Image 1 (cartoon, rainbow, N blue to C red):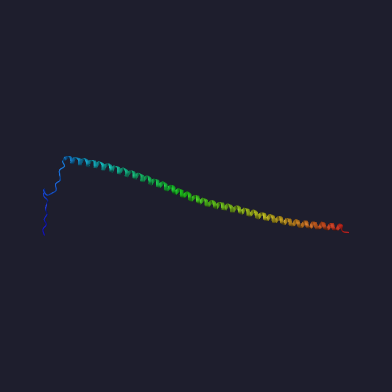
Image 2 (image 1 turned 180 degrees about the vertical axis):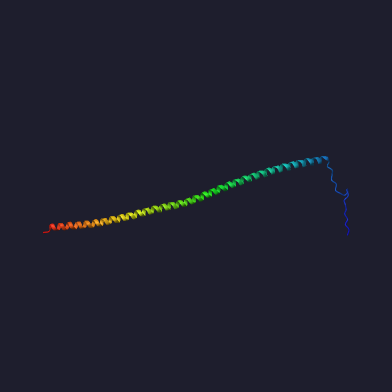
Length: 144
């Protein structure tokens, strides 16, 4: 097998019309403006990127600050809840202590009442004996 390569001759190619030197200068000016535009856009994008990086750093710093504040709030809340529970326990313990004191006072009152009752019973018995003795004496003197 043989392969043949043909090269197109100048006359066979499509012919482009010459536009003259003005078109070349116009293209160069357009390319220069496009380059300036691309450079300006690139600088704008770089500035926006730098600005975005700064905003991201600021947001990260604020997030860290907010995290610290949130942790402080949680710690304070936990401490407050613990103190409330301790306060409730302390109040309950105080009430229990006062109830015990009242109970002791009541028990002492009962003992005092029992002692007074015993004294009254003794006095009552003595009074009864005295009255019986007086009645006996009265009967002796009044009998015929």
